[in-house]
Length: 231
Image 1 (spheres, rainbow, N blue to C red):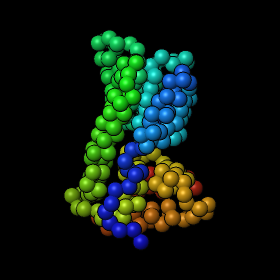
Image 2 (cartoon, rainbow, N blue to C red):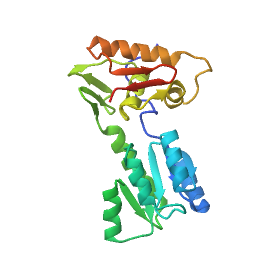
Image 3 (cartoon, one colour):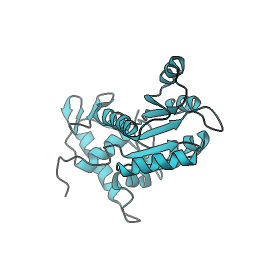
Image 4 (cartoon, rainbow, N blue to C red):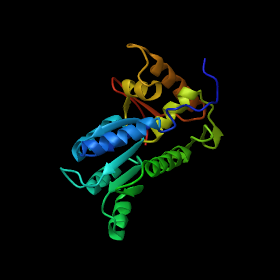
């Protein structure tokens, strides 16, 4: 039985997607980030990066600006239509106009090439720390990742650690339907045995606790697909 409290790695952002067409640079970034404890995935083009970002839901993106298929700025714009994932742009274009353009498109930070690995890691840590410390709100439902506190209509919702992690996952993208497999991968890092009903049990408990605070209908079940919070 899970005890209340504790801080789980899933809520602390760990997965980084590197969108970089230069394989040598990508390998250096992968090595530096892996040595620092992050899980690193790689895409070699803008289109592949958009697909990986949509399917894998990384916690942070490192985005090269000069990609072979289309400009990295376009990638930022497309991502910002439905995602708040932190984006750090890697660019050789060191002009004020370019920096203003990138930030205006929705980038969170940028690094001018060449840069020192220590500076990269420092920027990554800042973005991930900001992401997990921000309160998440959907209507009258509020989740504070730092305090591990959830309230609904100003009433505290006491959740187990895994219930909290599931809610933190869902509230980041209200309305998005997560399959049981995706929830299992994100919250249990894919360690659940095939055919396990653990996800369904946790979702049922979460639904009951929301219902106890008059949160009827907040948690949506899409039969045969998965779960979502009603946005």
